[in-house]
Picture 1: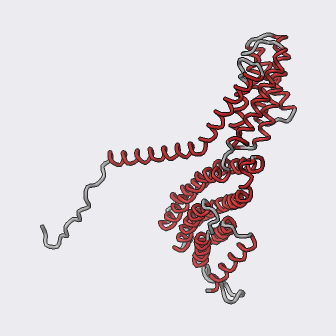
Picture 2: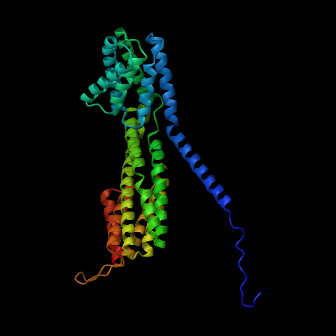
Picture 3: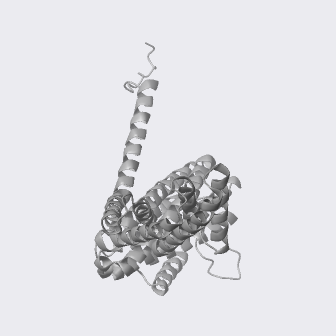
Length: 402
């Protein structure tokens, strides 16, 4: 060995391609299992509600309505329970009206035309046209067309059966509503928390990835983080529907009336949290533009984004507790605002003199969007809007002149 040659560092065995593939497979399996577990926790109660509603509807139809095969009663009951993640009462009315239309059109036309392919098509078209003229929504149109198909294909064209079939459907709808609101209503806040998980967790990861990409000035990774924030729109829609269902439950279900006040506070927090996430997306978009234009992005901005992600994580953990005060999350938010202020630079002592900022044009806009996002986060932490604005203003002013 030459005298000046340094020994090669022992890096240990390097992972082979097969081991990396196995590690990737294990990660995908764990992710799939976590996703299945989340869906089970979210929709498990709905399965129980649907089973109870279907059994009760069949029992009532067979024992009290003298119907040996009450198909429409359990079918409608299950449909009502399945609609429980949205506006329950509106969908209930649409489902029942759709059953009426389907029965009316089917029983009126099938004795005249008989059963067949073209007859079924005509009955479905006419049933949906009537539903459209009544300005019905998707549930009404679907139920009207589906009921018309049942009448046209599975049932004999006997006019005298229309009233019992409608009664079956009405009983099934009422039973589904009673099961969802009286017997086993969903837990409002817990349901909203579970719907918020697939929104908050990817947002936290995307913000951490964005901060790492800014430190590396990696435009491709910044754009990937931006894409990760953009795809959360559909999950936010599901979260909004869950909030509507939870508010309806605490308004109508006697077992959940005592949760009205706590759900109202939680709903307000989730609304502003959603606004903050949209603001984070605007920040990521502007930072991507700043990198494209080769603008300076000080380390403080990346640190602020990391801290903002931490505050969302802390806020998520705190709001799951009863009467917990999110002081730690608020302090993280304000510290992040201070870091963005340092990244922007001190204010000019003399407003008539030019001031050179540490950020470029897009960076300055990103700083403004960042403060807007933190404002909504402060409100989500339980502060009043005026209190959050005053606290944010004091933090910004203190940082600008320090």
